[in-house]
Amino acid sequence: MIDSRLAAFSTIFPQESPMSPHLTRILTFIGRLEEAAEQAMQKHFPCEFHAEIFITSVAAKYRGCGIAKEFYARMLTLLKSRGFPMVRSGFTSPATRAIARQQGFTELGRLYFKDQLDEDGNKLFPAAGDGEEEFANEAARFV
Image (cartoon, rainbow, N blue to C red):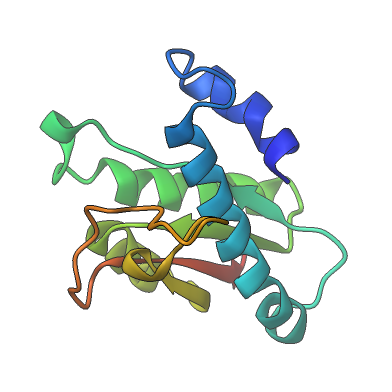
């Protein structure tokens, strides 16, 4: 999984070296999140293929303007027109999770940032807090 995601990340974040500690932490976490969601997806959203929205982010100065909400609305319309039966995505902030709920996504899996350890037992996200909103989830919906 990490190798397949490296190509995507190197395009999105060219400033990161291919196996920087930061990128490795992110990819490890995303892999765990996808694994946690896979069984639920097969149970609740059985289909032969689906679209996956990998990374969605809005620059800080434009947050709160409805950009992410509009992105998901347009993406769902596009995916339906292209024949995709369902879409799956990861959500890492309270704002994007709220958009997911508004757009009809169903949570498939959840991981709290504070609980994630690397192979040596060190926290993947040392700055993560204990708050209820300190998690990421995978969610899906039929298009």
